Structure formats: C-alpha cells, structure tokens
Image (cartoon, rainbow, N blue to C red; front, side):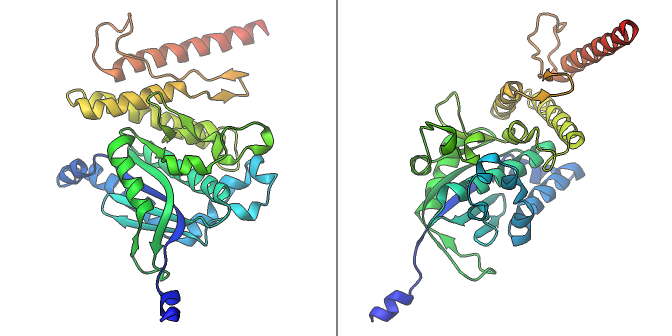
Length: 320
C-alpha cells in the first residue's frame, strides 16, 4: 500500500502564469466580417501556441544571457526550456515552470519571456493581462497531456480576474514573498528586478511596455531599427485604441492607462545624448483646437517636432 502511495501523482512547487487576451469575444464576433480581427486572433493564439515548444524557450535564452545580473551567477540556473509547459484554452493561457529550486532565476526567465511576448502582441494591437503566482501544481508528465491543476493556478486566475484590470501582469503576494526584497546591494539583484514595478494602485508587476524599457540597449535582442519600428507601432496602437474606444469607458480606461505607462518610459538615444521625447499628447492640450481625436492632435505635434528637428539639423550644418 505504501508503495502505491509513493507512485501516486504528486503536487509540485511551480511558478504559474495565467493570461487572458483582452477583448477576445468582441474580436471573435467582429472576425465574421472583419479579416483584420480574424488575423489578430490567429496571430495571438499562434504566439502562445509557440510557447508549448521547447525550442521557443531555448531560442529566447538570449533574454537572460544579455543580463549582467545573470552573468555574475550560474547561467544554466536560468534556463527553463526543459521545465516550462504551456496550456492554451481559447483566450486563456496557463504557463507553468517547476520551482523546486532556483526560484529567483526561473522567475527571471519566465518574466523576461512574458515581457517580450507581451510587447510583440501589443505592437500587433493585442492587449493581454494576467497574474503570476507560486504554489502547488499537478502537471501531467506526458508532454501531450493537457492535465494541469492546483492551488497556484487558482490563485493566479483570481488575481487576473479581480485585480489586473489593465494590460499588465500582476505578482501574487505568495510570489513576492519568495523574491529578494528589499535590495540592499547590487550583488542581490536578479534580472527580474528590472522588470517589476509598483503601480499607482499598489499592485506589483510589469506592463506590456516594460520590455522596451529593459531591452532598449540590448542590440542582440532587439536591434535599434527594429526597436524604433516596434516603438512607433505601439504608439499608433495606443492612439488608435484611444479613438476607437471613444464611446466605451471600460475599453478607453485600458488605453488611457497604457498611454500613461508609455509616457512614463525613459528611452535614451545615445546619438542625441538624451531621452527621446515621443510622448502621446492629450486632446485636452490648450492648442488642440478643440479636437476630440487623439490621432489628430498627435499627428499635429509629431509633424511639428519633425519639422523642428529638420530645422535644427539644417542650422547645425550651416553653422558647422
């Protein structure tokens, strides 16, 4: 009898991410007549479907390998390609990573991956939100199986459902308690410390924009040309979202939150020797000419800024 008990399936300590694609049901309805909505649904599900492949995680080890805080430690402790599992159910995604040891390292790798995929989805106009937790999970050892359950995923689901609200990933108190806070010295830093922030509503986590902040100078991960291209795409997605949700308060609040997060990014350009000012302008500006569309006022300001830059370069050449 005791041998049978030992052979029975057991819960394991695991990191768990529960992710929800925002506006999924609306897009499905729109997709009947709108090819763009259909394409976005297909793209989002394909992105997460790739997380079921071991190769996807292996290819993205670079996200950790470029981190100075990881380089000072045993880099192999950050590789989770052999222990990450992904389960997709319509618009809900569950990702699990075994966390019986090296919890901080594995958490760093998971957060870096979620941050990258979140940024890629946002650049395509797809918003997600979710939560990360840690606790007991049962995951079938068969890689083809979809069996996964436990208290940790319930915890992550409840936080996503009740608290995440905006396009961001929130950390549970259980997970925060396992991480190294407060940080008293540089030696204590882990890669995840660069991603995690305390939001104005008191919650802790990272947004779909955080990847740009962390990886802005990592050419191996995101070459400068690609970085600028994605950054511009994200700005357009947010502005379009603000205008398209003009009569939908719940959706508008999510895009307004993203606008504020976008404007809080500190993106440094070494060529100009300072911060890039690509803020999204508000329709409430004094010289917005009483327009109600964000796209109009931002086109106005962006064109003005580009003209000023051209003028400054022309003057520099003439004086140089």
